[in-house]
Structures are given as structure tokens and as C-alpha cells.
Length: 483
Image (cartoon, rainbow, N blue to C red; front, top):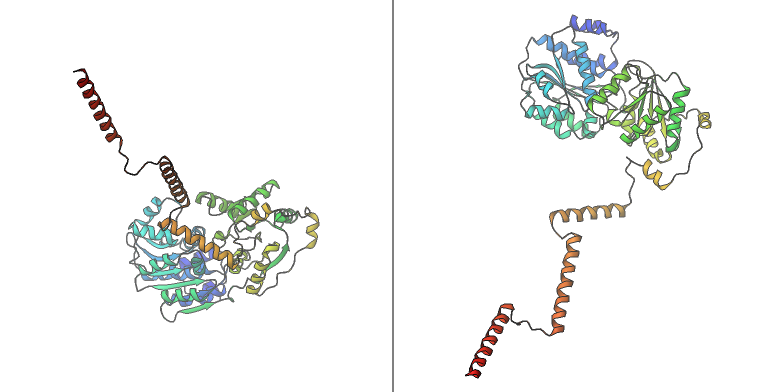
């Protein structure tokens, strides 16, 4: 099947030809006809399989067929995504496919000013791509309404739940009109994702599954290097310097600190690179991503928050500098390469304390990752002995496993801290002050007993009156004696 055989309008066919699309991918071939018929769809597809075009093209076609016009401060199609980068790229795809039509698109996300976003929503939007937090914020400000919504797409649903967006998703769904077409996409389908899909989709949706769940794309060639943490930077630098074919490289780290550290190592080797993570401003992140797309920099270092938000063509290599804690994240990482029918390479570094993560990844993907070229180790500096300080520094970002006694002790400490905040018992400082006060009081009492001073000793005023009375008596006696 070719795109020309699909029942799409001439403006959409023209945009498809301009994008050099020839044959639809499996998910596009299975999803587009069902979506054109107005059916709800549950799509299970790994990243890089063409999901965006699979739901964007039929939505644009149905918007053209409806003949309706957008109303102020409303949208007709809503695509909900977990990250800012992914939202921007999906909106760019909609704009690409709709450039020969009058359909309007907009993208809203947090981390930037909402002034321009509210201005774009003023006249109404046909296709709105949004992240959950900013969407709810603008709905609260009455800058956008979902009353006229016709199409709702929840993409990367499993990532949404991993990032804690479940409550925001439910709030958004509760605001949607009952008459709408629903599209639900996820790379994995555990029980909690299935339960969420059941609350959004209408009964008996079309189910499209183009690959086994959490299975890496077969076109990705994988390699594994077992290396201690302190020599990972040297290994990465050596691989990049010895392989000129690594022209567009993505490196994934576990922590933001680790991403910045990798960039410093590469800069010393005069390898152009940049980091993208949550601590970077939106402008800096967009600048780094834009430079990577235009090949002004060779290496882009990212954390897992960007694992599904980076959609860059022709990524030749993906490095797992740190293995992820969750095996599913590994699939999303390496899925940044081998896109649009091309081949790719994924190289993973495994430190001794990451062996368990490696076993979980191979168990999930059912693929034994082969060892890389062993001769590369001869070019690296000899391993150094780990110190307690270096081990603590290397373990940053990883939660160590704790014994049962440690868990109980931690729970008791948390409980005591909560009791202190609620005032169930006095803090230690107040207890010490109370004890000091008690000691000083008892010392005074002992001193009074030592002086044999009774409890009913007269006060200063009584003593003064007594002295005055004694003086008058003495004066009277003196006067009588003179007489």
C-alpha cells in the first residue's frame, strides 16, 4: 500500500509528497483507515514507528470533512503529551501535514510565559498540542475551553503515568464532551495503563499492535562494554574519537549532574556537545536541540526526561552512559535511532553495580546484548581503586537497597519527625531547657533550705513597714526620755 491509495484530501497528499513519504509504516497502514471511519483506537507501538502521522493525518482529514469552524477560546482536537520537547515536535508534524490547508495549530507547555499562548488561543484553534499542567492552568484562567472538542489523543500514556500525571489526566478527561473520538497510544500496556484506557475509550475500540511490547526495533545493532564508573568518560571519548561515522550521537545519563559532567569531558577532547535536562531553561533546551538537529554539535547529552521528547532524524548512535533503573526506559532510549526505516547503533556501558539492571533489560527485551570490541580497553587508563568518597559520588541519583532494619528505622524517624511537627512531644532543645529550668529551681530550693528560710518569710514591703514602725517606736522612746 502507498499513501496515494489512502482516502486523503489533495492538500494532505501534497504535504505527504513534500515530506517524501512513500509507503505507510505498519501502524499507519492499520490505524488510518479505522480512524477515518470515526472509531476509537488503542495503539501499542514502540517509539519511532510513525505514530504521529498515524493519528495526525486522519484527524486533519476529518476536520476538513466536517466543514465546521473554530470558535473563540476553543479547540477541536486535543493531543496530550508528557514533555515540552515532544509537544513541540508533534505540533511541528501537524503544521507540516496541514501547511496546504487553513487548519490552525498551537502548542502550549509550561516553563515559559503564557502571554503569547493565551494570545494564540484567543481566536480559537483547530489542533491544540499541550502538556497537562499548562493546559489545566489555562483552563482555570478561562483562556481555553474544551466544550467543542471532537478529537482527543493521549500519547505516551505509560510515560504519563511514570511522571505522575494520572490525576491531571483524569481532570482533563472529566472536562471533555461525551461525543468525541478517542485515540490512546502507549509503548507498553501493563494493567494500570489498560485500566486508564478503559476510562477514556468507548467500548470495543480498534486495537492496533505493531510489535511485541517493549521489544527493541530489530534494525538497532547493540553493543555492551563492561567498565567501572570512573573510566566511562574515557571510554566514551575514545569511541567518539576513533569512529568518524558517529556523526549524530545521543548520550543518556541517569542524573543532571552526570549529564553536565559528560559535556565537560567531551569539551576537553574538543568534541562539540551540549546537555539537555530539567535544570536547563526552555530556551537553552531548545537551542541545544536545534543545534543538534542542524549538526552544529556532534553529541547531545540528555537525561531520561528527554528520552521520549527527542525526535531527531538521522541519529546514528545512542549511548547508554548509565543503564536506567527501569528496563522500559532502555527501550525508549535506544528508540531514538533507527527511525523512518533506517538502521542505528545502541552502545551501553555497564558498571559492576549495574549488572542487575542489565539482567532486567535483557529479560524484558529477550535480547542478549553482545560484548563490544575488547581491544578498546588497552587504550584506556588503568582502573583506579574506589574510595568511600568516590563511591558515594558515583551512586548519586541511585537509591541503594536497604535492609528490613534500615527500613524500620527510617519509618520510625519519619514518624518521630511528623510527631514533632504536630506537637505530640517537645523538641530536644525545649526538653533541655525544661531540664535546665528544673535543675535551677531545685538549686534555689536547696539554697533556701540551707539558709533555713521558711515559706512564710515576709516580703520586702512588710520588712520596710516593720523597719519604719521600729524607727517610730525608737523616736517616741527618745522623746519620752528627754521629758
